[in-house]
Image 1 (tube, rainbow, N blue to C red):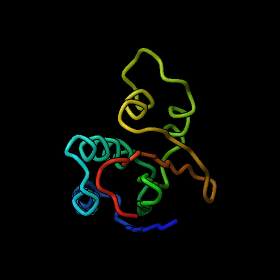
Image 2 (image 1 turned 45 degrees about the horizontal axis):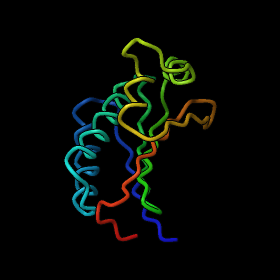
Image 3 (image 1 turned 120 degrees about the vertical axis):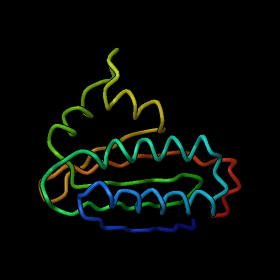
Length: 129
């Protein structure tokens, strides 16, 4: 099993979020992902990056292994954790949007704060892992 990982720590200021998108876009090119897959991932990432906790830096960890891209973002706020623990309902909330654009969403705790991991299959995208 081959695995690649990129870790990026950013100030929690909106202008720096473009760096995360640039890294994800570069990885998408390397993996030969389609535009739709990249758009789904960047949309999901934007939703998570805009969740405010405090002035603490944000960390994005992107892993590629076994035809799956895994993106972990954190730390996030408690409201994000609560919203993601609920089942998707009829409202267009964070849970429903993420369930639509990624294969699965996982919430874990690190140092008492929530981190969110997105899983997206990249099967058939020319990935050579």
